[in-house]
Amino acid sequence: MTTQDKETTKQVKKDDNRTGKPNGAEGKSQQIHELRIATIGNVDSGKSTIIGVLTGGELDDGRGRARSKIFNLRHEAETGRTSSISQHLVGINAEGKLVHSNTHKGGGVHLTTAQKYKSWREVMEVSKSVITFVDLCGHEKYLKTTICGLTGTFPDYACLVVGANMGVTKMTKEHLGIVLALKIPFYVILTKVDICPPNVLKRTKDKLVKILKSRFAKKMPFEVRDETDVGTCLQNQSSKLTPIFSLSAVTGQGVKYLESYLSGLAPRQTWDSEAKNVEFSIEETFNVTGVGVVVSGSVTKGRLIANSKLLLGPFSDGGFRPVLAKTLQRKRVPMSVCNAGESCAVAIRYLKSKESLKRADVRRGMVLVDPTSEPKATVSFEADILVLHHPTTIKENYQSVIHCHNVRQTAKMVKINGVRSMKKKKQDKPEVPVKKAVNDSKGVCLRTGNKASVLFRFMARPEVLHEGSTIIFREGTTKGVGKVRKVFNDSYKDTTAYSQLEVQKKNERATTSKKSRRRTKGHVAPRL
Picture 1: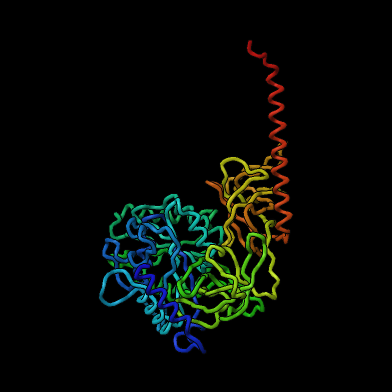
Picture 2: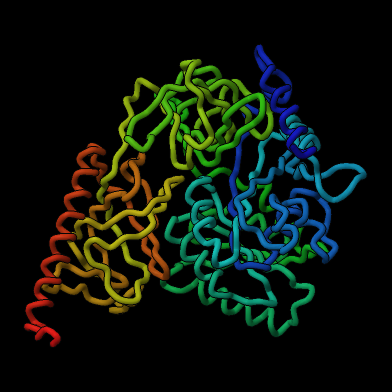
């Protein structure tokens, strides 16, 4: 066990042994509002560096000092590229100033686990609200991780980081398209303006403004140059107004305007904290020595109370099992209650002492729910979708990866109904290049720009979905977005039997085709 793991174990044990009514930072933190901002953009654009400057309160040295406080994994520090989802905290005090969390006196660049616990608790003590920055990946091979971060962390806003010297790249457009599909308000940061030639900076701005004003984005870009512009952006917050900040993490140019803008933002989403039945969406799982299995995620409905009896699921058979939520922590601070819209970590165990809960039994996408809610898992659901891009055609039995909040699983398009193209405007110009749907002998086909009502079925295991949830489906370069309209509480056994029937039919078709090929070849004379 490493020194960091030992410190984590000691700290969690110490918090787990606390009893009684919380006071001090613990009691105050229950009333602190949380604002979540997801940071997206192309690789090497400076996302982690910007977060390091905002959370650390110190400018970068141009050699990666600021981002070194942000990375989770060793290979991230070696390569300088983020490959995981990490969250970082900044507080806002009563005067509207940022309270930094990644600061410590003396020592090296990296913070130990004990220093992080201490600094986060200090931030919670003196802050009236907090901002959680979600650092996401920029490399193309980590796109699925970025989509999981945007759908599973429930961000209020997104921060699109563009390197001024790199320009608007392919991944910048990919991330922008995902944010627009999820309808998340965002602002833009142009980084590295201190080393970017003026003509390149102007070309990057012009291209960015052109994309934001296009019919696909329908945004109103607004460049922030002083405090007056910051006030204008805060007074006219809308889904169309998109502020653009030009800054340098080394010289500090434009950083104060960004801090003023962040301190004035308010949470966008509304949550139902008064709901009788609690629901907690699991994002990550841990195994802490001396404590057991710990899950982290967000409370999506109701209030999660420590030492409460809940149901964990769905498991592979579609069932739910009773567990006990022993202790809670929010932003590394022990809590007794966590309200809807807040993220926290929960230590859980089975109600029966003879049963042992293992980390391998819990996965991302599971939920903790109230036993009185009688939860049901589903393997089939109907959604209205829009195909954003596909190189050819999509037919029935097409498989793609579905992203819906923390759920990520392959699903099959069982049935396609009601195919239609996007409506055209008065100028008779479509928003997306539209290709007409095709009806051939094998069924209906979907192309880029088509809308349809599709019946999906998960391929591996049942999941918990809710009507009205936004989904993203992807497979290679294929991307689409949709909204869940109907959830079927079908039996897992029936689905398994249905899958076996499909396999049987497929084998029969393969046998028939082999026989037909043999007949066409004719009789072959034996060798003499």
